[in-house]
Image (cartoon, rainbow, N blue to C red; front, top):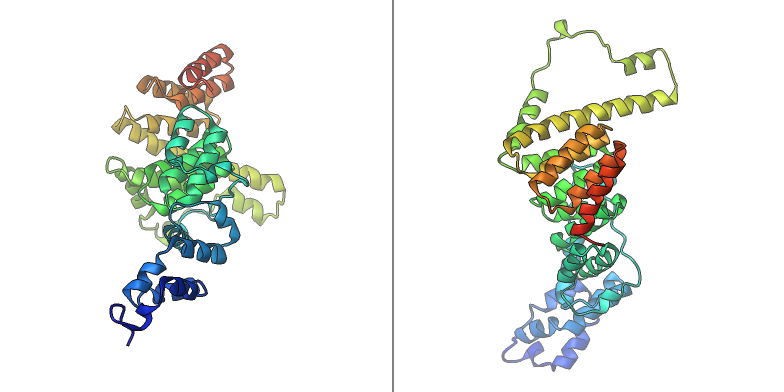
Length: 347
């Protein structure tokens, strides 16, 4: 009988127990921890888990310097088992690639707090490195993933922002910031249909706006017209296919028309949301981005102007207003908007 208090395996010195455990794999160490109290204590040893983690997750883990190796390995295991967002578009499931030789991995400081400060001071490249180091130590921190995505978005690197924000949403389905920013990045990358998925999910999570999405879903689920009353096919795309018109540019034109219709439907929902919450700056920013994506720069400018009226200290609103004024040919007004943005964030 193996009794941790009276004899058996519990009588082994801790050093010998450690040497036994270090040759096991992670599942067997977990099983061994149930043998007795002393083995359980030894199984929590930080050096043991450093060895196990680097052995099974790769030697690169040693560069991360986590504060607790057992928790680090546990989090990495949970992250690997994290389910994919099967409802979302497949192309956003790509993993984020961390930068090599990150000096912040060696610094025993509150990296998340430092990253937030650097972001507020607009040291975006430095903030990205700090947040990457924090995430590599605490990979389940959805707050850090969102902030890293926001840093890349502010730096106009949406391909890097998208996997960060997608990961944050997978970690926390209630993270509305991840949904909103993900929608904006999808628009910036011209994935209008994908933007609809995330921005409608953002509306759906708010009790004030959920009916705007549900009404559209109810309409889409309405009973089909009886077959005797179904009108003839008038879709020009199908017609062109029937007469074997194979101009490749037509596919592109049709796709553009379709995505424009999709965006117009989404804009209508957010306009309704704006009527409900006229002081919500996020809704105005989303509307500005959507209208800009539709090349309606005049309407886009109007929404960004409304946004700065709601919050005169929003760097993002002033910056977007400057870009939209420039697209409208208003160079002097664009410079004035950029100047306001720089006053809020000098760098």
